[in-house]
Image (tube, rainbow over all chains, first blue to last red):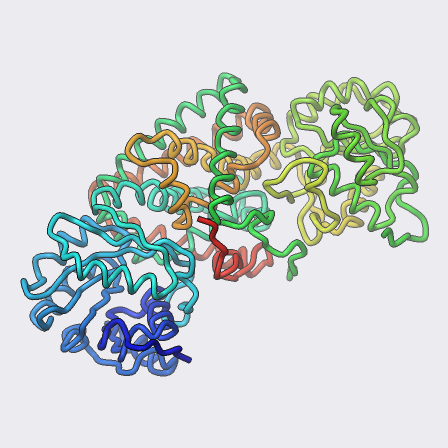
Length: 314
Length: 314
């Protein structure tokens, strides 16, 4: 299965937390021949058993501390809320020159939580792959998840250049394109392109579920008219997303304030019948979609290329 | 191309307005052998020329009045804002027993605008197919657009039963499943499953475009993290959507009020670190997604089945 390179980028790679991202990393590291040996762990015994059944790692251990022992690279793929505790457990076991990285969707909080536990003889290089699906768990992963996607490698004033270069090489080896930015800028960018969109998707699905005049079965039946795109996003992992909002609070509240301000203006335009204001916005937003398609970030196929003739069971 | 039936459902069918929906109807009516003859018109000379090039109709005429002459069924597929003027033009030309229908996303306003122009010897049966893509114009249509999708046929106290049955048969003949409801209920249901989702998608894409700290190119590059699903919706036809919001004002404002109320509660939960409230909502919304997939209204494939390995040009 693994196409082996001349020499793997890392001898011993530890994956801590084997959900969608952790399992996709296991697949992609193997595909790229990036590790001599993969050791994996997860807090859940059921997940560890499933990782063994799926053959995702060369070795499965019970604790993050054990996984980190002798590892050249430790990738923490737990929900962000667990990252501080995991780092506290791993820190004492990191060998000299070891690199610790993560995949969290928030970077400032992760640095605050994990950073203090990293010993001076090891390097911490936080990262964030811009890839995922609405599915969770070790069965959801696949080797191609990161192909052609962006991965952000965080660079702060104290970041070790050589360690950062190796983390960059890791992501490139898994098929991703890499960009570098500070944690502060990262958290602002992803508040608007990811966190607030998820929040409003969760929110409208909740609003629709709570109506008295429109039944839930009507919402489901007629979802093709726009709503169903939101339900896909609102089906994302609840633990992961709770932690994102709790840990990127300031940037999310800032962007949410802007969103609400703009929405209030639109609401006013509707109330007062100001069609030109609506038309102007609706024309402007089309250009952004064109940019996304031109840059290969999405398909131009209508409806994302969903089958034109869906099977219906009802 | 057309599988011909024993006898077409309508002898002469007029399509007024040949955009995405009008052209898809032309394809689907042909495929189903539902019309003896299709006559089409559009306010735009360019669109009429393109309809001729594409061979979408048996006859292309310059005005709606002409198209309606001798027609057994007239389907108005213009933006909602034009429906009153179109009805005023068509009304005098409707022959005894002729059926007038439409495809607008708002039904109360359409009935108010079009209804008064329908002569007593003809029948008005408003309808709304729950199908579409983010693409517009006569080239965007295809015969399968309505397959397995719902179409709503409006039934009010004065609706002629026989005419309503024929409009239902038309939509079933084009591959749709048909439901019947009042215009008032229709407008409430679609405010929440369609109109408000479109409005908030347009809104967040606009908010993102206006930021100072995050560049537009960053928004485009990193859109895979959630934002790009919104841009697809926000690329929908601006004229059509302006008219939807202006014409379904009350129901949209009502649903928007609920959405904002719920969003404010979420915002407060984030500010005060109430993780349990977030987790509870995020878990509840997953169940709605499951319902949509179980009822065949969307694919369960991750990321809507977008290719796992997109080509990238940048």
